Image 1: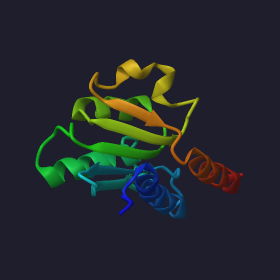
Image 2: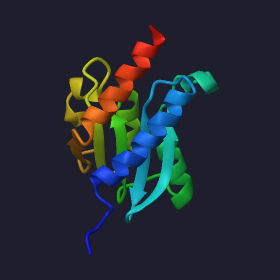
Image 3: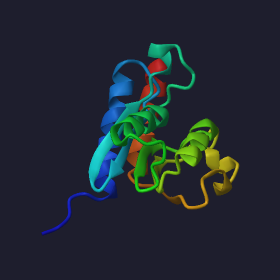
Length: 147
């Protein structure tokens, strides 16, 4: 039997979180943390709702996952994010020791890759471009709606 739990399946879940952000007027970024093919943390941007510049999707998902497992390190987990994390979120990914980071669309203006992969924990593996077109289209739609 084919394993339905692959990068695309989990990225679709992150995109569902991004859609939630879109619907409440937040920049549409979504994230999920996965451990042993189970989502243990979810999040979407809440910076406007919470009046908190740190309330990014990644931060919400990491906090939820850490609370779920009762530990601060997530070295056996994979974080799926619809958009390339910013430098602040890359720092949180570093400190939580996420085992793998998978993101969709690149963010050339604010993404952490401008600074280089070295901002992630040395043991964190990186994969990007998963469902990038879908994630980028959601971002374009959001900003077109604002204009």
